[in-house]
Amino acid sequence: MKIKKIKETCLYVADLESSRQFYTEKLGLAVIGEVKDRHIFFRAGESVLLCFLPEASKLGGTLPPHFGSGQLHLAFEVSRGEYESWKSKIKDAGIAIEQEYDWGRGYLSFYFRDPDQHLLEVVMEGMWEKD
Image (cartoon, rainbow, N blue to C red):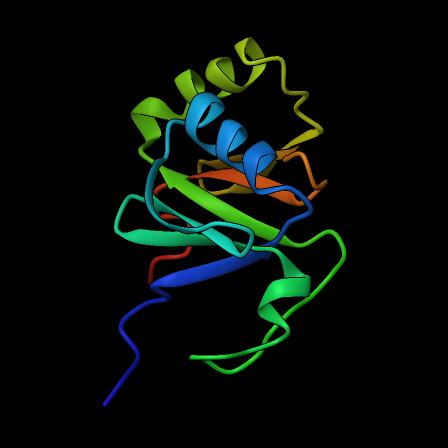
């Protein structure tokens, strides 16, 4: 028995509409679920990015309560062939790239922020695969 992958990851945000605009208009993610004044969900390849208002999700209800704060981190994986295009897309969207990092063995990634100052990363496909 083994875990196959992380299917969802969650960020806690201050404004759902700002998150919608950023993740749809600037990154091109599709909205796949939404509850007004609570959360918005985006498709990110085979994964799902959940954005919750922490004051709503900490109340619980149908599902157990959860919440968080601070500058969280997640990474989006892109093909090697699209890596430079993604850097250009981010820059063209007026988003500052904070840092690019060479992980060795030919793998690069770069970092930028969303409207809530979460640290987002774009990483080349295959970086964490087994050797």
